[in-house]
Amino acid sequence: MRNIYFCQTNVKLMLSVNNLSVQFGKRVLFDEVNVTFSPGNCYGIIGANGAGKSTFLKILSGKQEANLGSVFLEPGKRMSVLEQNHNAYDSHTVLETVLRGNQPLFKIKQQIEDLYAKPDFSDADGERVGELQIEFEEMNGWNAESDAASLLSNLEIPEHLHHNSMADLDGKQKVRVLLAQSLFGSPDVLIMDEPTNDLDYDTIMWLEGFLANYDNTVIVVSHDRHFLDAVCTHISDIDYGKINHYSGNYTFWYESSQLAARQRAQQNKKAEEKKKELQEFIARFSANVAKSKQATSRKKMIDKLNIEEIRPSSRRYPGIIFEQERDAGDQILNIDDLSYSLEGQKLFDKVHFNMAKGDKVIVYSKDSRAISAFYEIINGKLKADSGKYEWGITTAQAYLPLDNSKFFSSELSLVDWLRQWAATEEEREEVYIRGFLGKMLFSGDEALKASNVLSGGEKVRCMLSKMMMSNANVLMLDEPTNHLDLESITAFNNALKNFKGTVLCSTHDHAFAQTVGTRILELTPNGIVDRYTTFDDYMSDSKIKELRAKMYV
Image 1 (tube, rainbow, N blue to C red):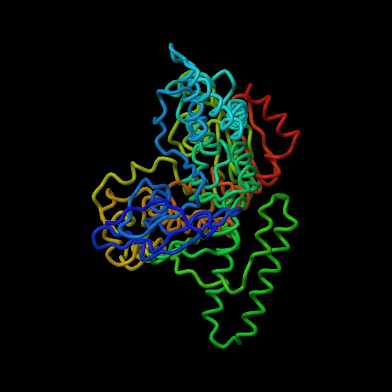
Image 2 (cartoon, rainbow, N blue to C red):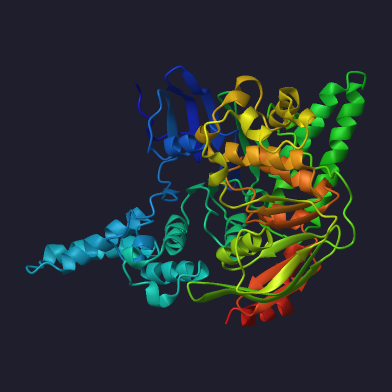
């Protein structure tokens, strides 16, 4: 076995991978991968579940070995990695944890402090301190603490916590501190695995802006498509053990690969016509990016879009189609003065809400417990403190709860598991059941798996099969994208956009909320905010911001 190593090279490449091979038993994860990551670009690493995205990041950072190959980092360049172990710095203060993100700087700082602390401080020590202070100044060391404090404040870690121990912080606060650590000191190569996890909307928006204008190399794995679209200049696709770079963000990669797949199926279409169609697609996409509200430096990606890079994807997308057995009438859901508290804390109060036919409502709250309690109440699983709700007599509801574990406690095969919700003899037939499971990528023997051994993503896909089979005209979805891969999220998103019925949905997926929602319902301890608008317009409206701030006091 040959270790991955960092060494000098005469070629001015920020970071390169040469002949990388990784194998676990008989399974080949990477096979002679050769890729280069250049300065000024942000690379979004994508791939199906189990393709090796996180493994690849660990190899790049030297935290995991490969069977063969080498990683070259340009001499003198610094790499920073977003720490995944949230308790790794519990013995340090918050500010020190951030400063440790720039190890060369931190080591010099420590050396200076250690020398000054010597009881027998000598002239030689004084000379050495002088030398170190020159280095420290060249690295902008005298501003290090204020720069670190500024990062922390931007990530909503208030000043009074900066000198506290990391052990005193809660999980979400630790995530933010470790994020600040990875960003500190503008590393030449920044590696991040799911950086938006446990961040709220405003913090994610700040991070998007920060990275979109970042001048160095960023390599990121994320299931957040809005985030990938906002920051990425390139998509790096892990496919059949290889990694290929494509210019553009995730949406460009997805739409262009879908177009290429359709073209491949058009045998009679001339090559010149196909080329013209691809060129027109690039022109339309570039025009949309150019006029988008997100005016960032990442718009430079549109100059790099290349017709030669466009090719069909080998990805398998679930076939998610929601159909209504019957159209609902005008009365969908009426809620009158609903309130709920948990352990003496008011989660929501004075909810007056009348949902209209065809509404696609994004249910939002700063406290996720409020959202889950709201769904559980209107599904008859939980009793409210006060108030009432009433469903229209023509409605048929399907509900995807946040916690689906109670559905998967048996050893039933997936075929028998789904059969539990069959309404007719025809629906009980195995061929019929397998049709719904097959759409969710459970084909052949996969459909005979025991339901109690499924992964989180597989459970959600089973729940979607159950929902599709119900043919409901009202869908309720509490964080539906949790545990799903990008392919499933994208297919799910498109299915909801096309659904003709009514939807209540809560999600941390920004793209999901923006493209599905036509109405926003925010639950607060002091009432609701209810607006017919898009998610982005709701979150950016200054008057609504002012109102929302008062509702949580």
